[in-house]
Amino acid sequence: MENKSGEFAITRIARHFRPAHYLLKIQSYSLLCETGVEKYDSGVFEVGGHKWRLSLYPKGNEKMNGTGHISIYLSIVGTEKSPLGWEVNASFKLFVYDQIRDKFLIIQDVEGAIRRFHDIKTEWGFDKFLPLDSFNVISNGYLVNDCCVFGVEVFVHERSAKRECLTMINEPPNRIMTWKIENFSKKDKVLYASQVYVVGELKWKILIYPNGLHNEAPKAISVFLDSIDCVAPERKIFVDFKLRIRDQINNKHAEERAKHWFSASSIDWGFPQLLSRKDLEDASKGFLVEDTLIVEAEIMVMSTAK
Image 1 (cartoon, rainbow, N blue to C red):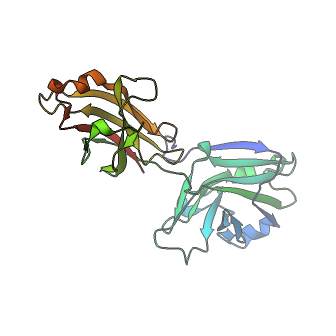
Image 2: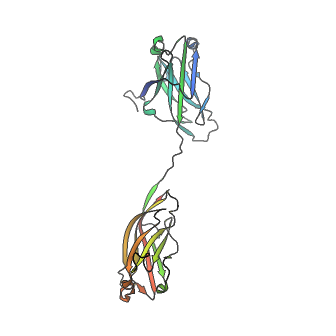
Image 3: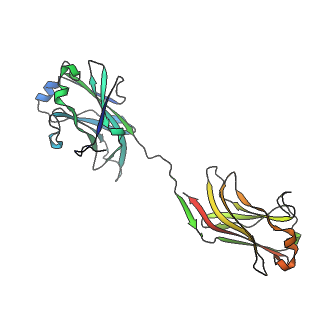
């Protein structure tokens, strides 16, 4: 977030407990300033698997209009062997110690903004961390007996979030699955399953109960669409589909449409009474020709997630 002057807005709050990751104590601070040293680089410390250091400008970073202030920055170091295109995302807090009140003044970006460190931008911080007029006033507690203490906390944000891309596919390839069942009248098992069909990248079977699903529809043929891919508990597949038994004479098929989320707990879906036994046995209806039944599943829309 930027303010009207184009500078990033910051917050300043105080707390009692010290910074978690690094403290920089400077004694004889006035002598450091008198030497004319423009910048002091701290020792290297490690946080989140990366190496860092603080860079302090006692009289301000003139190149960044920090004159009249203390300027302080966090730099990532030791990246010479990092792969091309490397980057590290981190938020951080910078501290100065109030020695009179035993509190640390925290200065950070508003809402703890995450900064991207990379080969072109290895340093982030504050050009105007603290006005020298305020820092030098003994009653403020920042510079006492010519001694001051700065600190930093770094929070590295690793790219470990799991990602998912949901795609809805309209009329996927090979969307019509056709199953010809010969010698249908001789089928005496409770359940029959078709071969495996591949629609898009997903696998399916058609299930048929010639005498109905258990005792729920004893005078009808039950037909279901079965997902082969819904094995993992977190896997879900949406399908808008039709199940039909073809009328091989009049093209007046027995057909129903459904929309369903297939999952490990609901791997099949369909219709317990897709076709009555009475209509099946009526030769004029055309469902059973030369003792062959033709069952189809057609997928209009389905989802894939990667």
